[in-house]
Length: 608
Ligand code: GTP
Ligand code: SPV
Ligand code: MN
Image (tube, rainbow, N blue to C red):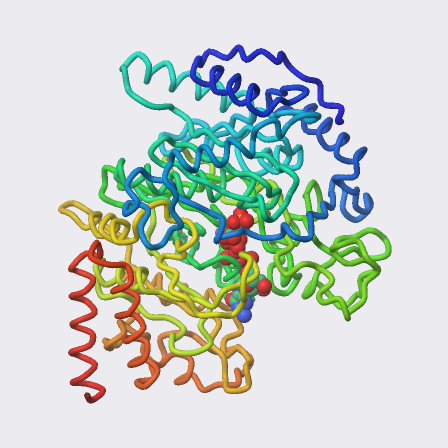
């Protein structure tokens, strides 16, 4: 057991609904103790000390990585499990073909049977948290009940957790009660590690009741319920009802030499470069000219139209749960600087002097792999390919002062992108909002290690939300289209692909910091400073539109990188059509119309 002092076991907040729920959960799960988290430093220190004592956390080298810890998860519990993740709406169709569905009654019964008595011998933690700046009208609160101190520690880094969040919940609940409004002012999340048995692992969402139940996993998105479960699956449902958007997007501010800052929101699927783009360091010539990059968020974006018609966005998170492999002084120096202290590493390797290590960091040879075995290349990579770091965003050198702004930041451009070895050019611009929604709705990407299952398979991943949209994709596309209304000043929409490869499998584009060259063209389009060529696919940069000087010559010609190949695009249009059909009749007619026009035009320009 750990050394965290327990506050009164009897719930006594000023929110009767919260008290009643906590009492019900305690009666079901039978914990030995209940701890209400206040989010204080003392509490955090005690949690860490308890986990060090029972081996859940190993301290890392205090000279090189003060306040840093290693957690080794169960080897069968290292990524999100999409096939065990359900959306449980009363009407099956509301979950859509994009979600696994179970009837709410059946799902509750199944989960409650698993939770029955599952916290015997354990402490139950009650974790009030706020997604977004605590005083922001765009922020939303939740309470996660969990028996994992590792989850509590991660939630403290990833959210605004503790007393201030509870006070907001109490205040908002009182207002709701006074108004006689139905339902809760907070999202209820119940989580237990169970026995970590992959056969008894489920993540269930009840968006109609703002409720999440997750059993049998201690891994990130399955267990830190504020993140994907609340801030994307439940929030996307709430956002549709309330007229906003909850998206799998980074938010980055690009300050130009003229002194203006454009905020860009970008949706790339899991492990496809959001953290890297959010923390980008400009190439030297750009730095010298005065370009600066400000990180607002690296994974989730909540945005809503403001009084001025623009979309205003907040990052609901307070920390980064980032992919470790591939992070280096060359690829992402800001991330590397962020994680030198007070960071929890999960499933990384260790050097012989107790420093965290992963593939792509440097050319040292690790002593121990992610499972704690002596490193042997015959066992595969030393760090798990989905090894992660958890760290407070405030430690990031490029963290934007605007990240804490309760009003959020205005979005100038929305960028969609994925991992595509072929077909997709480096960048193109959508013709208008409807075409932009089409581009997002039909995007695809090669799968990565962030979810269990085969890696490298091209699948449609609309708006990078395939695993995260809490309702029917057809309704989701219609919701996106609905923002185009009188008075709206919507962002321009783009698609990028950093991952195009040559015939030998090498990336054609250097990526990382050099991606600013593409963002410069994008900002130029927003400011009406850069030109474009109209094509079937969308607006492409003019040959000299993207500054390539100073780049190492890549293996491909710029035509291969920037252009559109007719044969592969004909195939792509066929795949897009099949996907749209698979989503079914809830797909808005406007998207079918975009496809029809693209096909007609491709026939006349590319030949039948
Ligand atoms: P989630 O946290 O899973 O949602 O992922 P993410 O989109 O934040 O992914 P992240 O930025 O951590 O990128 C993951 C992988 O993509 C790492 O292995 C990076 O090295 C690689 N990567 C990121 N940006 C680029 C790029 O511009 N070019 C290339 N070739 N690889 C990149
Ligand atoms: C992702 O998989 O997109 C992540 C990591 O950001 S997790 O929180 O585990 O979902
Ligand atoms: Mn993500």
